[in-house]
Amino acid sequence: MSSMEVLSFIGIILSLTIIVVGSLKGHSLILVSTLAALVCSITGALATTAIEGGSLWQIFYDGYAVEYMKGVADIIIQLFPLFLGGQMFGRLLEKTGLPIAVANAVFKKIGTGGTVAAVYIATLLLSIGGINVYVIIFTMYSLAAAFYKKAGISRSLIPANILAAAVAEQALPGVPTFNLVIPAQALGVNPSSGFAMGIVAFLIIGVLNFIYLDRMAKKSMKSGEGFVDRDEDGKSTVTLDSEDLPNPFLLFVPLAFVIVLMNIFAVPAWAALFVGCAVIAVMFYKRLGGMKTVVEFLAEGAESSQVVMSTGALCGIATLIGSVPGYGIVVSFLEKSSFGSPYIMAAVAVGLLAGFAGSALGGIQFVLANFADKFIAMGASPVALTRIMAVSSLTLDSLPHNSANILTFQYCKVTYKEGYIHLVFCTVLTTLLATVATVVMAELGMF
Image (cartoon, rainbow, N blue to C red; front, side, top):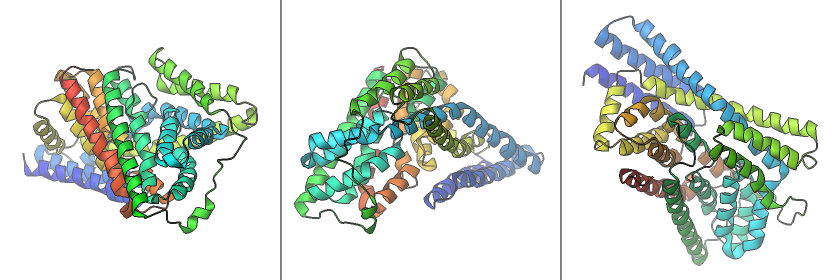
């Protein structure tokens, strides 16, 4: 290990730190990622010039304008159809009123006596139904706040109560979530592959999360802590008594089309989501206001899909890191920490990089871009790898700079000091246990 390799490695750490700090401060991910790429490129160029010679400017240019930009472009090409389909599908579902219909049905059935269970089950159903996590947050908060207040439970549990179920859903096999679809496509397996591993991971995360939240809610009620009103609460409205809502079970009709097309007919996820959009438009044509408004809603979803640019800018860092001298130190660390197991190496690599990037997809893309062939050469099963990547990406991506966490805490009027400890248990500790379980199952050949 030369001093120049160490310099490049320091550049990698600095670039990842820039992403963490920039995300926490709410800066544009495109701007933050660009700055991180420039730092990684210049330290990599300095190291390469010292080791191999050549033009510092040319090597720096190649690092940023060729390697990084190629990585960004490849990610956008790969992900744009999926982002587009997912955003349009979620937007149409939102406009049908199905999210609030499902939430209302669960809350009415369970009542305030099972407040935590009502929030948990409703969120889980919405997540399985393909509703975007941001839509879920906006839908669930006002209902959760009203029931938490009536039951006398601290509002500090609301963010974890909402996100815990959404995280559990992402461990399920066969669902159209990015953390599953992307590695499945890259490794050439069906999204429902590794079914047993997915179900075990889902049960570990889902059951432990619910037990923890239920115990914390009972502890809150017993202590008399209660629900503290915040000034902004008056802006939230609860529509629990609304009668102008569709049958909540209709949510599963378009979802069934998507899942069947993906898992039985091997249709690409983006194409299945496009079909799902068409099914929603036909089912709720009048409710959505006719062709003109359907097109408008699709356009809104299409506009939202432009977030793929930020994702591409972030994930492009993975390609760049793989091209600089310091990458050898990264590989050496991962090999030593994995005891020669491709499954442990995949879990550690995805988890750590997802943590740095604050993005499950960022961790997955780094590993796919730099280690997928190595894992296969080491004898790993593509099926087991897909499942391990999907679950391990849910671990450290939930650090404070994760954008979904930031939005949830802001919208729920809960500070990190009040509620983050609950989120750590539900989105970090339980997912780590699930990851360990999937690795063990993979080592035993229990796919």
